[in-house]
Image 1: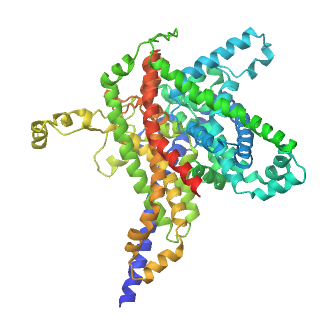
Image 2: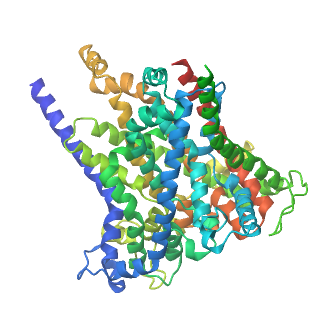
Image 3: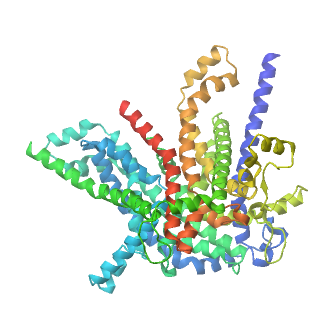
Length: 297
Length: 328
């Protein structure tokens, strides 16, 4: 009797668990459903009370219109995100290497002081940042940089400037992930290489770097996602509409009442696509980056 | 011996650019912003002449800023509570040997891969009270209407829930000198709930993942031993699982707390300052004041306020984590 009761209890609580999971799934999928369904509709249909319904005649018209408007900004985001991701990962790897295998006096104190940089509200550095980047433009102009090379100047209102900012403020998180990863590599390996006559670069090149791929995957995916999704730096540092990344363009698209909902939804879906694809195919590494962000090594 | 010291010099040279970058771009710039907040700079032309704490005095006397503080407290509390409740609940359910665990986990976590701007734009539409062009119902309200539930004006609702001075409780509070608690500044703006919903949608999966990692870290023997000792399922959670999850809750509070104190993107994309500043937050106020209004010294004082609140949360945690790591 008792056992039968237990069995019933187990059975019903199992059903309960699945009901909870289904309800939660509905909550997380609701916006996805709306995004997909609305962006497949023409305006007249998207705007009526029947908007929760599946489109009567699915069309890609909204996507085409959204893509038309977002395409240059989509490219800007790629030009910004890819170099910034690669450079900041390399920098983080070198920093993590030094802070884990070449500790110096004070490096234990230095590390949390660096880490603080990833928690600050960026509002608290924006005013000087704009001033300094504007001055960089002035210096570049005074130094007579030829127009063909001006896109490389990391100044105010340029993609290079925005990338530079992302690399600088990416130092804490990239350093953290690499340092914690290299800390798991036995010091004996490094010592053995040193006895064999390897210098600091050779130890990195032949001992640490070849086994760094998992950490690179985590850091690059993390940086790609955060830089692609970032808004505050992007909106402040790109007054020139031509260089705006996709988040700012979507923000402006959605802010205008002339642009219909269906186009806005299609735009939102397009802007989310690259990071979503990364998540779908490389979610494992994304998750590790997330947990590293909570300082748990 | 000579080579070793050469490597030592190189190692310092390798990390020096990053140290300098952090020193200048984080600490130098914070000091610079602090200086701006104490200056007379109001307008496009920089003016760093000394003003003292005038900007802070003006800031705390500003009704909009007082509302912002209320909004931040309300948002942070509700956001943390719903995320912890939902995240922990889903993690516990997923920890029961559920079929399709990987699928559900990935599903709950995917909003983390999306920009707050996309989330804001989408939820702005879902929670829109009606189409401004046609006046027709939109979004969630269509569903609520269909099943006969009351509709909400969501983020466009200017109502603030607060203790009314005319009620019994309100009069009691006034008599004991706590009458200020009956003002809207100590209420809950209804519009803020919409932002909480969108933010929870985005971040609760992350909380779930953190709790799930914590649950997986609890040795199975510990739970089994307790069950053998005659503890009920609930007893195991109460006496073993929940206490062992406390460090996770601390991490969640720090990570979500600092995000929520400085929240900007989501509010900007969804509702901006809202009706009667109902969804305004300090980060958005700073953005408008500084980069749209050109009141630089005033904006800098808001930025420093934000930094101080985030630091109060994060610095003890950083010190604690570093110490614990040094002990291990």
